[in-house]
Length: 500
Image 1: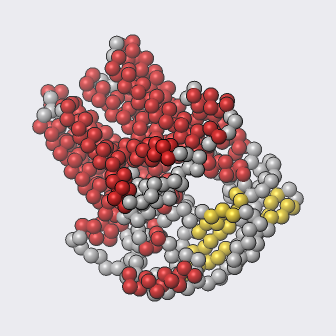
Image 2: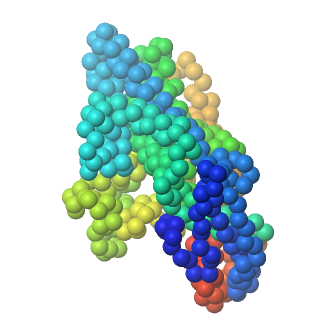
């Protein structure tokens, strides 16, 4: 996404004009239509359409409202508040029953992610460099998400009532249709920019809350249910909210990965894609937590090494790649941070990355020497390796549980339970493939279909080149030289498929 002042001149484009007429803004927006032939050695750029529309207090050409309701902010705050309230209530019941250990662990998995959420919101909104003592006090009282949510809805409610003193022009590419790509300029006011910041902040806090708080909390409460052979109302409520929080956090992680990977494009996620990701992550996380709980109930000592080894591997892997590349220390995280502060932020990021991969696939690969901290060349190979190894691990853990199961588990059909857990993980993989094959918002930019990518990873079958197949490397080189003069129409996403 490229920002420039509204008076900036762009080569080859007419100047965006901001007019004030009858109390609304009028913006001239130019659209460039690019035609690209994938099978040929050269790309042909033709400016075939120049259109203009006017925005009447945030209304687009089709009459839709540009400034969307901050519903994602409301969902994040609702899950955060509900889970914190349920955990605090359950901790009081543990205290009344004399279970001090369960009370301490329940509070630990509630307060630690809550503190991290407050710090994340302060960091993203840069409150430490601004004179806002009331906001900092509310964050210390763990009420920061609530006041941020109220602020977002106040901004949304007051939008369109006061004219913006100035706007920012953003430039986005639309998804290609019939080999054509359109670039559209749009104006973004201050209010909309603040809402974008709120959505980005709460998307990241949802991921933190999900995998550093809700996932350990769900595992703990399910383990207590197995030990006590019963589910109370408070514990059941907390487990349901925690599971919803994890699935929602994983969904936000997927959407964040897509938007970071395809930042130059206007990404629109349809309800069918949300449903696919919800079912994919729901089956994946539920089966993973169930397998860990069953294994820990019969082999308590061994569950810590199993989880810890996997966590350390994912935590150290980005750092090992960074050190082996001999790249300079990243200095572009935040200008106000010192080298120690940057190191702490990167450690927290890799800690979160490892926590995600313990329970589900993170959909991104960290690359600390990249400005976006994301490896944009990730393909099917890492996903296939992750799910293959995770499926084998789940099979081994459930087999060990079956061998060492106690008399309590003999009341249930253990082989059927083990089969259902493995089948649940297979369903998760099925919905993941369905998402990338049919529902991914940027699937037109893929260089190969998911089925072809899996076959190429397995190395057992080479499918014939289809509509997703990229041209050969020898043909790419002269074509890319010409496409650079065509304002980078062919992006990396069309050359290297990514699972973001």
